Image 1 (cartoon, rainbow, N blue to C red):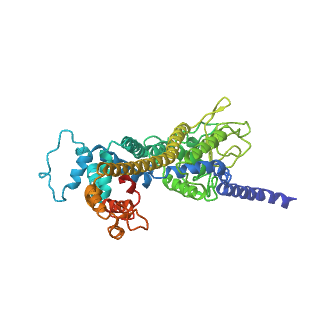
Image 2 (tube, rainbow, N blue to C red; image 1 turned 180 degrees about the vertical axis):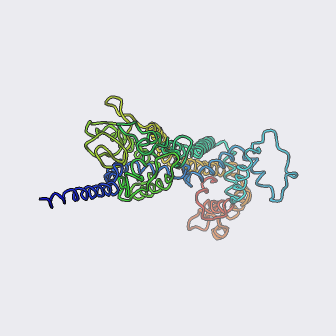
Length: 486
C-alpha cells in the first residue's frame, strides 16, 4: 500500500504533464472554428447557369447592325435612277466630258443645277453608269425619261420611295446594335462608369462576411452593388473557409480572393469564372439576348424569394447549409454557405441594386432584337419594291419604243412608195403590158387575163408589200408592218 501511495503522487504529476502536452498539441493541430469545411460543392450551380449567359454576353464586343449586300446594291440603284429622272440633261453632259477635262474647262454651273457639291459623288456615279451603257440602251432610257409616258411618274416616285427606305435602313444600323445593351450590362457587372473587374467592386476592407452579408450581421455591402461581386461571393474561394477548393458553382474551382477593396486576385478569379461560363453556357445572339436576360432575372428573383435556413429567411442568393440562419462566410456549417444575403422587408426579399439595371438591359435588348427582326422584313420589302421599279422601268422603255415606231410608220407612209417610184409612173408602166401576158409577168406584175393572151396587167400587191418591208426594215420577211402601208 505504501508503495502504491508512493507511486500515486509521481503518477499524478506525470499524468498532469502528459495531459497538458496533449491539450497543447490538440490546440495546435485542431482546425480553428473559422477553418470549417468549404461550402457544399454545386450548391450554386442552378442560379450560376443563368448568370453565366450574362457573363458571356457582357464579354462580347460591340457589333453594329448588318446591312445586307442586296440592300446596299438596291440603294445605289435607287439613288442612280432617281438622279437620272431628276437631272437627265446634266448627267448626259457630265457623261460626255472626257476624262481629262479639268474644272476650269467645265462650263459654269447653271442656277438650277441639281448636281451640286453635296450630290457630286452620286452624280458622278450616275454619269459613269450612263456612259458605260450601250449606246442604244442609253438612247432608249433617256427617250423614256423625256417622254410624256405616264409610267415616268410611276418610276420616278418608286425610285424616290425606294431611296428613302434604303437610306433609313442603313441609318438604323445603330438600332440593331448591341451597344446600348452592353452599356447596361457593364453597369450591372462592374458598377457605373466601369467596364472591367477591379478591387473596387468590393465596398470595404472587412472581408467575406461583410461583402457577401449575413443575417446576424448586415446585408451584403459589395455584392448588392454589382453582379461581378455577387459571382465572386457565390463561386470564389478564400483563405479560411471556402478552401482549399471552392466548387460551389462548378466542378472547376474558382481561385481565392480577399473580399476587400485592398485585396488582390479578383481579376484572375473573375477570368476563371468567364472561362467556366464559356464552357457551360451559350453566348446569346442579339435575337436571343432578351430571353437570356429574362431567364436570369427570373432565376435570381425566385432564388431571393425562396425561404432558406431554419427560420426560414428570404433574401438570399445561393445555397446555405440547413440548421441555421443565412451567413455567407463560405463554409458549410449550419446556415452558412457561399452566398449573398440581402435581407428582407417583412416577407418581401430585398433585391440587389444591379437587378434594376439588369431590367434596363432587358428593355434595351428587346428593342435591339425587335429592330433586327424588323430589318429582315424591311429588307424583303425593299427587294420587292426594287422588283416593281425594274418592271416599271422596263415596261416604260418598251412602251416608249413602241410608240416611237408607230409614230414613225404613221408619219412617213410615202417613204416605201418613193423607194419604188411614184404610183402614177408605175401604173402607166403596167398599162403598157396590156394584152401582153409575157411582158406583164416579166415585169413582176399581176396578169388578170387568165390563160388568155389578152387581158389587163395590174400591180402585184404582195410584191409591193415585200418591197415596203425591205425599204423600212431591211428584212424581206418582216411581216408585222406590211399591212400598215397597204
